[in-house]
Image (cartoon, rainbow, N blue to C red; front, side, top):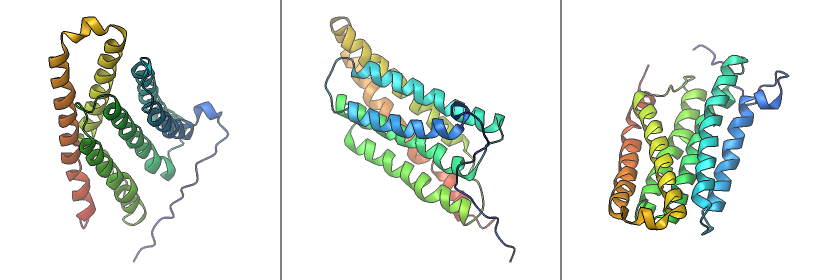
Length: 208
């Protein structure tokens, strides 16, 4: 039996400034996730706008941590585990906030299903594959489409809620169509989230 390569979760330190460190952007998404949950407890007109700004930052930071990790050769086991976990934490927090603002769009069961799915992948499956099977679980196409749909739905939902806060009278006449988008859009997110787990489960049970 060949010895397994040693895995190291310690964030790499290569002397680059913190704003070039991929782990800075990873941890900042965890912090932003906490901020999103806190803001969801308030009922102010500016909350959807603030959440939209948080979403834009989360997407930008997701790009930057990968860009700097590759550009400065800072790819690490730490990043392989916590980068996707930060993405998952943010979107679960965002959907929880959307549930608080528009429960007819995002039901609590939808948030629970997404949270369980993301927890299974990032708390169990990825670490198990990396440290036990010594394999990196690459993002499957279903997973990438799931991420795209989450970004599109979250961005559009917050844009609509921002418009409803700023121009309630003008937007109210489209309320029926908006509610249809809100509910069925989130239902599509939940469905694709569950379906996209299949390739990762297949990799888990594979004997290769």
